[in-house]
Amino acid sequence: MKNNDRRMVRYSEGALLYSMGLTMFQRLAKEANAVYIIEGMPPLVKCDVFETYIEKYRAK
Image 1 (cartoon, rainbow, N blue to C red):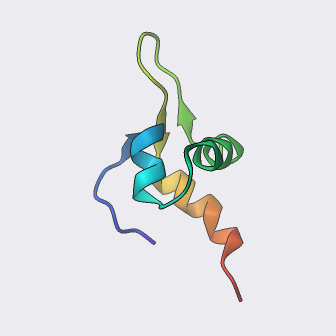
Image 2 (image 1 turned 120 degrees about the vertical axis):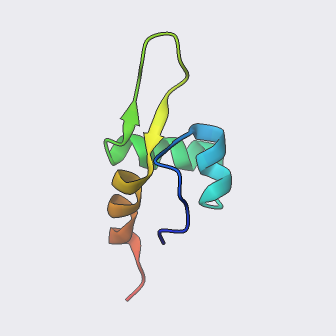
C-alpha cells in the first residue's frame, strides 16, 4: 500500500490519500499510535506506522 512519498500527513490529507472518511482515518491513526502532536500545529500522522497497522485488516 506504500503509494506515497510523504512521511507525514495531516488528518484531511491522510483521509484522501487512503480513500476513507476523516473520522475513520483519525480513529485508525490513533489506534496505530501514528499521531504526532507538536505544540501550535495540527496533528500529523506518520504514514509508515499507519500503513503497518492497517495491514492487519488485509483480506485473506
